[in-house]
Image (cartoon, rainbow, N blue to C red; front, side):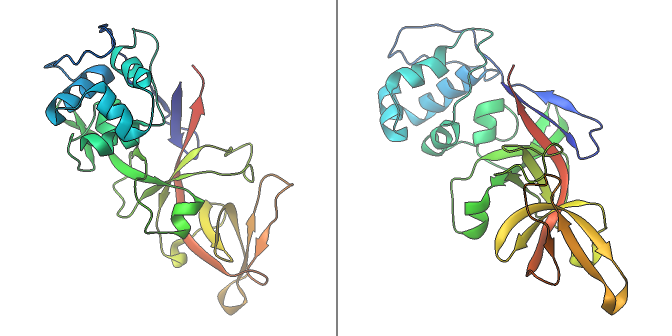
Length: 245
């Protein structure tokens, strides 16, 4: 499975697919490897550095040992993915993005390079719960192309902007001041305190200026400056969609 991603005008799209491994050993083995080009090898190295066995890692993460074994020894073509990668990285003391993709600094840092070239930047993925609770930790990460300060990812919880943006899509949000917001752009707002993705529509000028936050899906409400308290979180710079492969 893979995320397909690009900017909101659907140009310059590319497909990301995590690395796969070809190593196979017996359940319970802990084999040191010098290379870190695959998920299996990065997981092996991280466990070796931490002096942690499959059983110990499974207990710390809260999963079965067989799940760790699968990630360590999946065969070519299976493209292993796990929702526990972030927790594994936390236990092993490495970057979740590095553990899953091999890009970036294993110990952190948000600039991602490959063969000496800058290929992106790592940002945290937020959802409604973490936006409402900024103290929440252990957030997942994603890559983006922007250098904008304060950019973050946002996982879409509903179909309000379907078909342009769908439930489960991951957005790259770039904070901008309200004065810079342009009509027709898709943005992340807080509407009466609740995060909402909507298309901005402006009317009038000066003191008579007003706006609507429009859902593309008619089953979802449109919000207005007259009836709702609205705060701008940022503009949608990229959309990434999870695609079965």
